[in-house]
Amino acid sequence: MLEDEQRPGWSQWGLLAAHCVTNLPTGISQARAWMFGERLNGSPVWVPVEKKAYQVRAGSLDRTQVPPVQIDQVVVYPGWEWIPGGEAPVEAKEAGDAALFRLATPVKVRGAIVATTEPKPGAKVSLVGFGRTSNGSAATPTTAYTLRTTVLQKQACASADVSVNDVCTDNPRRGNGPGAGAGACSGDSGGPVIKEQPGRDEVTGVISRGANVDCGESPDVSTSVASIAPWIKSVLNDEIAYGLPLTAAQGGPIPHPSIKFSTTAPMQRSDRPRVG
Image (cartoon, rainbow, N blue to C red; front, side, top):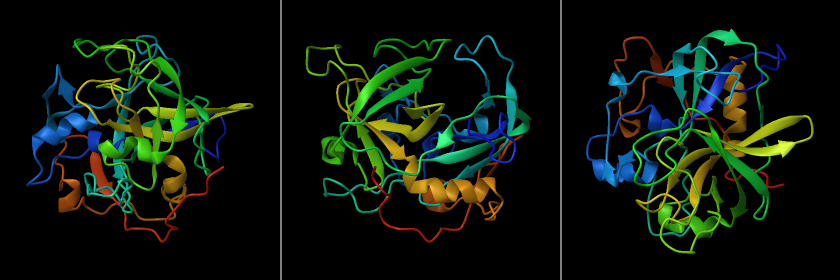
């Protein structure tokens, strides 16, 4: 959840990955879904968004300890187009795998602040999520796991179609034998990449994808929050209209029974976020 600047100590908006809340466009193979963690025991699994039930449990890392709160709005980042792909090690076109969600009612929690500076290679960050803890497991934990890791050069994630505005993170113990790696896995998508700051955590990334079918076998890619920070703040402050329909490249309209899915017009922005 993100801190409400107008009401400190309260949150109504949060971040997640766009691929979690958009459908596969016509012509995109379901086999690409494995790159985004939508897989079970190596096989791609895709459930249409209109058949998914979304809810948020805020205030505890144990999801059994807090009641669910309903989502009423999802706003997909306009730069999201199901991964640009290409031959370049680092794609010049952003992947934009991010979206904002709004709770039906605000919750009293201490939210994270939005990063405006992208972490440098070598920076220490933490990935947080409720994803599977092994490649062979179908179960997801009730308590969120935290993986402390390090930011890498973007080129280290080239096989995952890394883009200029993504963050690449290492897998601790990677390369020490089958199953020895540690990284994001199915169910972690949309979770935060956190940089601990004095007094308040800073969300620097949104977990997006890996390069291999097996989790922990390659570095992981997250959308850089610094690259979309102006857009985030424009939506949260009602400075930009967010009622536009999703484009065909984003998967098209979603007839969800209780949540409105939309996007915004593109914003004027620099090609690269500031690196701190």
